[in-house]
Length: 201
Image (tube, rainbow, N blue to C red; front, top):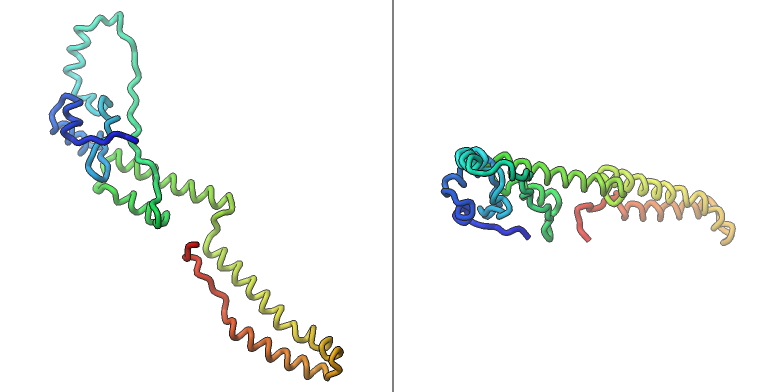
């Protein structure tokens, strides 16, 4: 887990004034989390490059350039991990992440963008995997399956009625009529198909 430090501690480690640190935050060169703390991995980063010009030029004059070794300075990755809290939907998590800091400096806007892209990739993966389907598609499948079952029951009395009548030695039309009445009554009691897709198991 990343070490989080105050602005004052950050300035102490960078050996600079707190005002410089605050200006870096305002310009989007440094990123604070939602609690107002800074990631310690940003210490020594390139955010002070313009401010160090005078000090760096003096150091360059005093140094033996023949013994200099080139080092690459990488911008620290201060993006917070994407987390969905217990009892929180993906949409709610995205909104929480988006509203974590406002107004957004450049670095924070990039972080939010990356988090949204991660959410979209997650949804895309779940959809291709088959564990996620569109609500409209699920509703259409439910409706079509229910309509097929209803049509099958409506056709059942005319198909089975004569067979039942022959077994019991009764009039086929009368048996079919009675069965049809009971089937219609059962279908009316069942009502239209519906499902709450928002319910969580």
